[in-house]
Length: 319
Image (tube, rainbow, N blue to C red):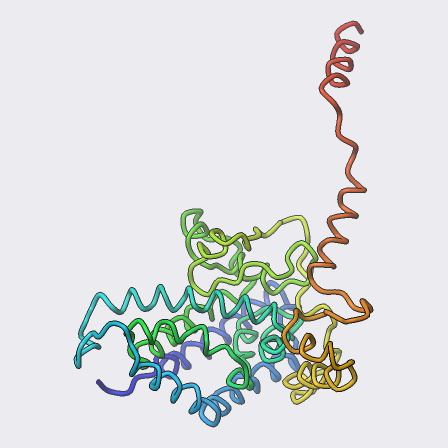
């Protein structure tokens, strides 16, 4: 089977789409693009490609090692087993969901994934903010079960490439809603805008890559609310267009916390959720959401009992 990387063929389409959206933004939403921010996003894309070539060898070697222990064997012409391709695509997207969810809940993985969320703008160039350091985390562990099931590493890589291509177009504000049936099953710009939001109601939701059904199944789905403007970025914004700071700031923060923490808490700063601190001086996304829900509950009018409703109705009739 020839070597094939679908994302390489999609790059010209990415460029055309970004240029088209820039024209749309100039006419309809000039705030959607910021030149320095866009340059950082483009540099992220180039750097991630180089980093993948330099650091991807270990993950690939681990996958081929696991492939020797596969439970099922599709034969020497595995690439010709037509039904294995859609099955691999769906299972790979499920693996992506759990890996992506872990990347928001384990600080070690968040240190690599935060790159993708670091822009305060949401446009197609934001999709290019791919990690440089993902191969330094444990994300590969979520893919290994597919290898053990018998899917060839090349098949998984190709399916993952198409998954990445799909996710490009959902990074836009130019598309408000897709048809209802599509919104119910697939990841869309509306669903993914929620994922990139820092609004408390939206934090750590909509982890899907292609199929939003995973979020609906596992209780992490939140719909976009039209009357609340979305704030993009991360809870503690970068405040800088420095590329290297954007890439490594969370690694620096995590390693600093590990260095300064008491011994019994060092591992927690590596494996617990972003924002966790042993002295409670910071807030996790769960804490931020809980505070928002408490304020929302306090602002809501008190519930009216059935007896009170009947009394009010009786007074109205008497009047």
